[in-house]
Length: 233
Image (cartoon, rainbow, N blue to C red; front, side, top):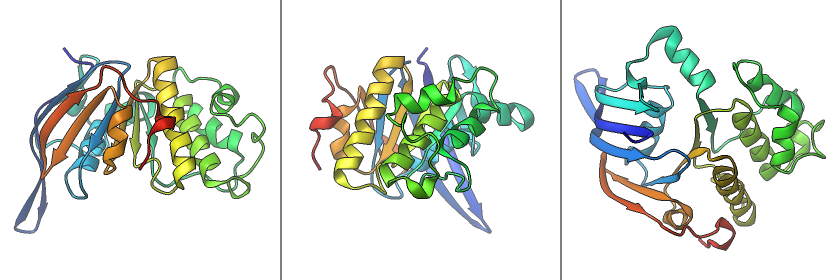
């Protein structure tokens, strides 16, 4: 069984008498330690996939399993524990607590986990060993995103879910963040999923999932992913 497994997943949102089908019979599987890019245009269903896998929404039909456990069946306290323990989130906007230092932001995440990594070590791994005591307002956009990645990694999660992680960054800083994510995946055998509309990101992935109109239109694997530092868009 794949490490991450979507089986006949459907998601329908009901607004009054109108039903909007965001996902229609989605099927795909990912292996542990892969960097996967889920790519498609706006409104294709990419973020819905991330929300379902991250436990921020529930399926209408179908099943989602992670490491053999049916996470789509989780409810209540078990679902909260799943979000806290098993999933690290990185978003387009960094969502840092402005009156906490970089180190304190990462410590905040590590305090809710059973088996966290050392916050200072995580910040050093993302190249911020000289920014531990800086507040977000004293950091560049790229540095703030690195804090967000360190915060996600400090949870020691099974999955690292990244929703347009370079969307608020300039080109060069965005490439640096992609390099960091790719290196993290290789170094730690961490399962990383990047949601994006940017097709250039396909080259850095072990696996690419194309989504359009709520369905998987194509899946590809890269035997030799390109280093993120060499990608242009």
